[in-house]
Image (cartoon, rainbow, N blue to C red; front, side, top):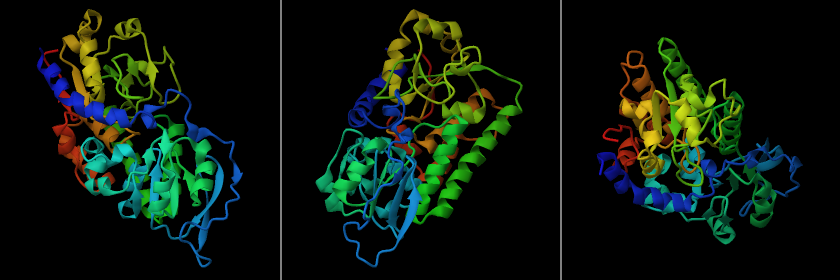
Length: 392
C-alpha cells in the first residue's frame, strides 16, 4: 500500500463526518444554477420589521439584498444567525460575538474543526444548532436563539417564507463560488451588504481590498515568469468529494494566479464562470496536464482513480508533479483557503517568483486576517494541508 493511500485512510473518517452534514451547502450544491440569482422576490418584502424583542423605539435601515429584495433591518444588529453556509463571512467581518446560532456542520466539535473559520473560533461549536444548510431549518430553535436578523446564503426563494415564520428580517447574500469577474463582483457586493447590516462597513472594505491585494500580488509574481505549465484541479467538491475528472474551469486559486488551467483552455471553452464540471476520462488523458493539484477532501477517491493505468500514466503523476491542497470548496467557499492554495501553487510552479513565500506561514497569515486566528495546524492534523504526493 502506498504512503499516500495510507494517509488517505487516516483522513477518510474525518472527511466522511463532515461530508455527511455538508451535503446541501455551497460547493456542495452548485452543479445547478445558484439560488443567489433568483429575482422573483424583487421589490419590498412588506414585512413589518419588529424583530423578536424589538420595540417601537427600534431604528431601522434599508438594504437591497443579493436577490434584489428590499429589506428593513435594525440599525444596531447585536444578534445574528447565518444560514446557508454564510457564517464564514460573518467571521470574516469580525462579528463572531454577534452570532447566536450555527448549522449542524458548524456545531460538531470534532468534524467542524475541518472548517477554518470554526477551527479558528472553536467557541462557535458551543452555540445552539439551528438547522442544516439547504435541507431544513429548525424554526423553534431559531426563535429561541432570538436573532435580530438572519443572513441566508442559499435557497433565496425561501427568504420570505423564513422571514414570515421567524418574524425577523432575512437578507439574502451571495455564497456561490468566485473565479470569474462577475462572480468576484457579486461576492464583494454581498460582503458590503453584510458589512452595512452588521455595522462593519470598514471591515467589509478591508476584506474586499485584501482579496484584490492578494490577487494583484499573485498575478504580478506569476507574470514575471516565462513558464506556462499546464495545470489541472481534480476532485472539485460538490455534494461531498469526487474523483479526478471533477474539476472547475474558473477555479479561484488558479484564476488569481492567471495560471494555465487545462479545463479553461480557449480551445475547450467549457464555461465562462466558476462551477463544478465533470469531464470524461478520455478528455483528461488528452489534456495530460504538467501539474496535477488535488482537493484534499477528495483524496481517497483520487487515489483510487490514480490506480487506473490511464491516470497513473499522466505526465504529472509520472514526473512527481502531483500536489494536495487545502479544501477551498468545503461547506461553502473558503476564500482564505483559496488564496493560501494560490500561494502554494505559485511556489510550486514559479519557485523563483515565490522564493520569499513560506506557504504554511502565508496560510496562517491569511487565516489570522480572515478568521482572527491561525488555523493551518488544525487542518494539517486532519491531512487537509499542503503536500507533494509521492509513491503514487
